[in-house]
Image (tube, rainbow, N blue to C red; front, side):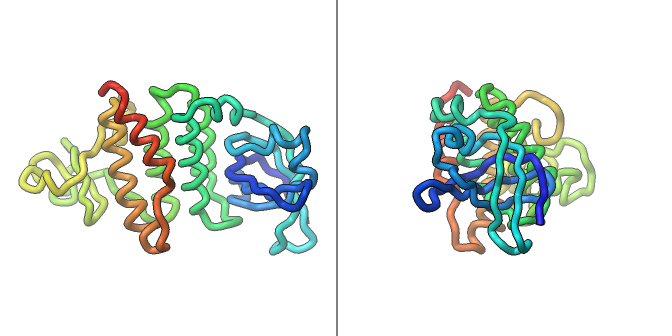
Length: 240
């Protein structure tokens, strides 16, 4: 069998002396692995880098087999990202979290969001907020989406500034005031198209990180990607 799709390379590992195995998040076929023959060659190595967008042809005799990839470059961003530790931490976070998706299940919104974040990766004042939005979408795709549409206590949608760690639902200022020390702050940019300050992004990462740990990493006995903490440290060092 054979299919053709566009995708973003998440990881590459050596296979034998000359080949490599590429993990790619594709637009229509989800997260798929495949063997790239000659993947360690001088011609292939610049393409086979995490963060690069490629056109992929996947072939296998049977659907359940590993299969082989033939790749053509579409958007090679990896080189520029590798030179900037802060951006590299962002890319590694994206790749590590995208690896949580089940194999060979399409998640078009996660893929499109990934392309959007990578498209802005050279704008350090932009991509961290997009990363938070992408993590929100990932939680939703995994079945653990947050409900920020109305207050969990009153059912109204005005002045929502908190999120309950128990329910994952928004809480209004008035209803949350007595419990504010136990609630997450809800950054405004997650509700409307407004600019996000560094403090807003840090609050957003704290929010999504809690629910990713609770619903995804902890049940699997796994830990959050270390590079995500480097993103947080990099942001914390910036002017708020």
